[in-house]
Length: 102
Image 1: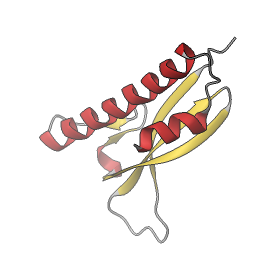
Image 2 (image 1 turned 90 degrees about the vertical axis):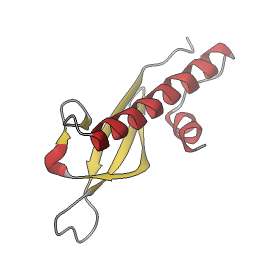
Image 3 (image 1 turned 90 degrees about the horizontal axis):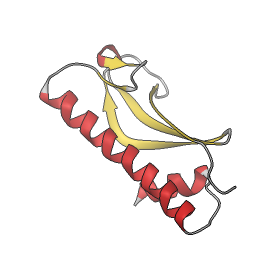
């Protein structure tokens, strides 16, 4: 069976020598227990991050824009998975991560 489970999770990653302020946002792509992390090239305040929802919290414009961007990345990951399944290829976390970098 070529169809494999795909898990996506956005999280904040603390930079080295963190003294407060914004943290980098990463996407963890997991396929059948193998995970790869990918930076989404955005940063966000930890106090305004909903870790259960894996999104920015609040209704301000900046939170809506960020959540829309994260939604686009999520859709691209699912499209990459569908692309592989349609062509009979094996779905891997590395391929999904590579597809999101473009």
